[in-house]
Image 1: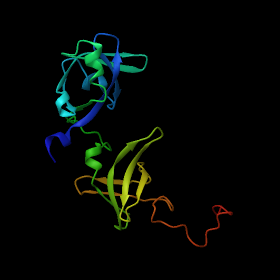
Image 2: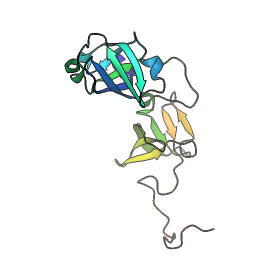
Image 3: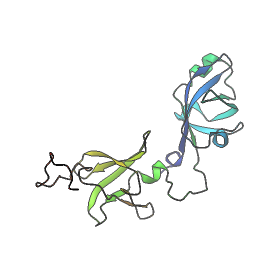
Image 4: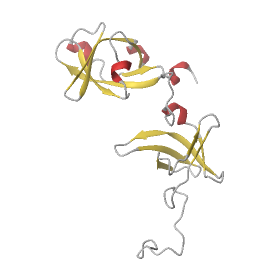
Length: 186
């Protein structure tokens, strides 16, 4: 893994706001006030757009806005649309919290050790996060990233355990004796 692969996406630059170079951000961090504080220098994707230093940060009407040093007008701000702002991972580690780059590439197994496939990444949906699993059959499955279904994440061991309910994975079948008209036994 090279150095840029270990950087985390903290925000994406949106459209300009006003005439003085301010831009709206799509924020991808839980702590924008720290990660985007004035004076903070951030790497960018594409690399040629940065590094960028935050000159000012504000929060208005549920949205975050920044001005960057050296970006003084609306035209310059418009040229930054779509630039991704990247930062180093924080050194504090929360229990049961993983960065997307730590999950990508992990081997997925059943509780019995059967190989299911490989985790491609994570997607943040409104209801909950889901792991993107590339099953060994080649099919892509979204697995709810909840303890009941993913009881173990072992980054050091290079694996996750997925205890999938029947029918979640593409390779799982509903038993032949199941009657869809009857529903579950009560």
